[in-house]
Image (cartoon, rainbow, N blue to C red; front, side, top):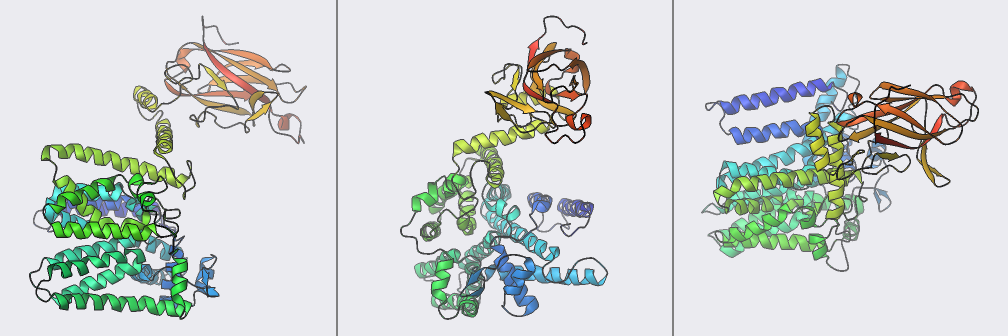
Length: 622
């Protein structure tokens, strides 16, 4: 679809996939692993797939050039890869380089090769797409792969949580971790970053460790697999390497028979992957790679900002993601049953917080929330499972409702953050600023529903969200619309046909633009009204008439006099409706129509205000 295929193709594939999932889940013979909760989760993943942003940008460009150069050019000369993408190269030691660890490039390699195979076949069949490693299918495949990797991590977590707490609670926890944390943002809005892959690698590592430790016998090959997954996790996000201490401390604390062999096997396999990163750094930076790596990864803050990282309005972990508070509390409940595991998890959390608090931009630059701690997702999910599992079953429906509200709040927060309406994306956003922006965004959505839902329902929703009416109510303009000084919470008020607001001689105004100017006004209780319009002509000596209309119905015409004057038009209640109404001023001519070659604005009039007044007795319009 990103490459130009019709949207109907993806929609058909989605419908077919969801239908297949539902069919299998409904058949107890064929479904196997797939039951109703998992079918619901898969259907949600399929529905949300088209929301994935298909372009590679930001840090992801550095992983893209590495995977393309290695797989297609068979070298690590990255200059031509940056040039092919049309972006400025990242440089260090005098040449084009990549500051990212190699892990994201490794997990992107399979989808990149799949995109290359598909694009090569399509190009050979005559499709207008280049199999050069740069075209849209390659970029879109990698961002979609991040989404799929993170979705797999959530499915892995669902299986572990189901084993511990049952399928209903497992589904609830996974949906909350997906939609009420920054994970959703980095799966859809910014999938070119490493965080979706980080959650996948960290989840695979943690769950493999939990599975292996439950065996009564220490099998070196099993612990070697844990080490490999841990090495991959560290190569995706270097800060996640603190989690490697989990199996190490676990074995040393328990000392089961053969624990030394297991420890050696895990460490050796992790070291093998670390050699891949070491070779890449030597190739890109030379022997002095250590100082360069520390510099480009912003290591070396003068003091740890632990409290800021956790509680600051500037991307603080708990401030931006309140769900994590419940996750951490869940570790306390976990400690009553598995003290060692809960203690290890809490210690890993503390170590991760401390490491990231020492980074110079502890707030995570332009991150949504505390993005660098997303690698802790499996530990936090297990904590949330313990927290909800300790609740009385009668309280779980209320908990599910609270989590749903928290998910909606977080998704709304994403939109506010991404739009930059409150603050630049690397700055703080307080709850007060956020709530005002969320209410405004919700009002805009309600405004868009005008005419699509019953008028009474629309009015109730608009009023409940603090909407401003023109004609009365708790928030009212008192009937007067002051052009040029419109309320900022009514962005829909000024329609087309106006120039930007101005102030002249202390009068705020707007000039008309073209043959007509329209306003959209919210009326709470339509009745027989009069509209009084204060305006003046813009071009002296130009004969001009103005017609006032409501909801496309002309209600009267007046000759425009020189200077500021007030013009009154009768409005019968029959042409008004509860909700939004279109008020229009239509002009008999414009300066450019009447006087060819007119060099100024194409403005027939300047309008100071329009006022709606209750009519004492409706008179026919002239």
